[in-house]
Length: 177
Image 1: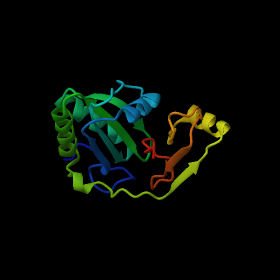
Image 2: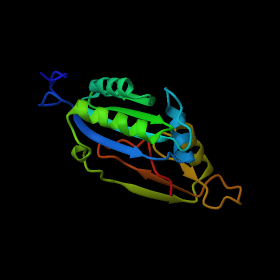
Image 3: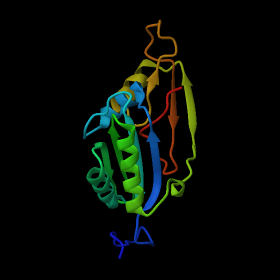
């Protein structure tokens, strides 16, 4: 008998693996960005990290439980919505994070290859961003980051890149260009 009772969001007895991303070394800018919304243990630069998203959302608690019971990883972010759930895990030892990922995949009866194929559905570059625009983005920071392309200048920023995920919401882990 599956550990998870099927609901209206899924036909099988296990949640659908939507995203599974392992990062061997979290870069300083991404670590800082994660900390702006992190409600768990803050990741520091250069730790290994794992991001997992599943459907339906409430099942993410089982994912977190499996990872924490199998390893000593720390949760940085836990997002629980009706349709989707996401957890970000990290540890200084890459082996611990990989082991947590294996425990999660075993619990989900899935392989990394079962995750949804990533697809960028929108990409925008804004050059010479206005100060008021930079201020409002800096206030919310849920999907975009600003990078000064000429660090010697005092300008607020010169470009920003926004990425959209298939659900149409801004990606919380946008990449600066």
